[in-house]
View 1 (tube, rainbow, N blue to C red):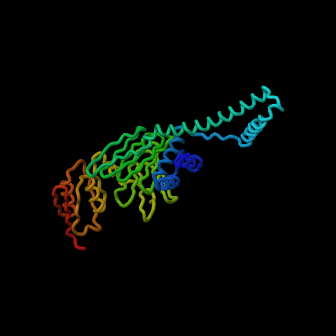
View 2: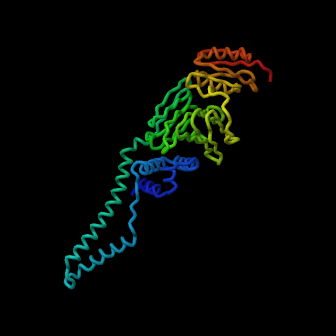
View 3: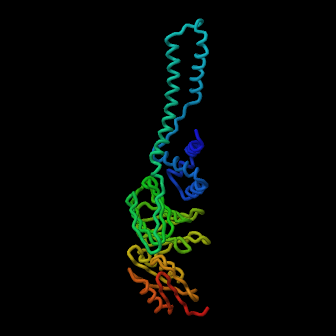
Length: 343
């Protein structure tokens, strides 16, 4: 057995690993993904072991040691007595037992080897199904992703979504940026999204996750979801029109009511600001219109509110000029916002 096969076998013997594959939790996700990321060897072995458990339903065939020992003793005894055939008649029963014992060992060994090889072969044949699918949108571009289970993801600009080809067997995704999820209900395989510091779990629902600011914000539109900290014991169950956020210095917040459902309707072409800090407004506009915005002056303490549907950037900046007194200049993909406030 080579080194890779040995590592696969060890993982298959690990109860914790099998539990993670079959019934993962945020804690086990964090532990095993951290362990896997240490080396390519671990990653390949873990993917193979996981595939064996999920697809081939690998079972270990254990042979009772006392029975096996007695059987081997009988073969050895019969073999050693073969030199005394002149003193001991070779009967039909003796020949039958000897042949039967050898055949039994071959059959048992064959079952074990066949089971293992068949499992490994299953992994080799479906190795491509374990490849990560990565979807990335640059600033200024949005996309709609149809997942294999029937769920739909609207991926916002400057955002990345990752999932495996065998998604139907493990509905687990990783998100950087912002996405809106319409989840197909499946009570056997929960839908889980890792957004960096929290995992959001759903069966069938619609929710939005935004990691573009200095926090992770999860907003529920329909159904019910659970949000768990990856490092910590805090979790919350959200009902429709509720929101929760995570900050690295404060952890997971308490859930609260959404100020407006429009705040998560960006995929319908709506930009919605509700007393939003200027820095958040700037980040949103940069991602939405694929521009770079330079801030001149001091916008600290200023907030902005407004709602726009498929609007030109110049019209939004004009609105900001009237409400905040900010001046702006647009030159190709570069924008300047000039705040004339005193510090």
